[in-house]
Image (cartoon, rainbow, N blue to C red):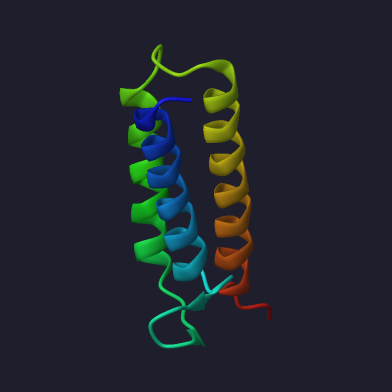
Length: 89
């Protein structure tokens, strides 16, 4: 793995962690509290989707699978959090 591959994976993980934090799934390391901002989480997910599209054809199969796995994880967690906002009669 070259330094750019490692840097790319670190960047993706930063956005993954940021999205999970914004969804309230992880504590905010700055405040040590669970905070929830689904608009911000959606932005992080959109950035990862953009990275996937912009790197299409330039990722090896492991990197591609990682991106797809992270996006699937984030989307499922996002839907879970959105559903918590639904008011039941």
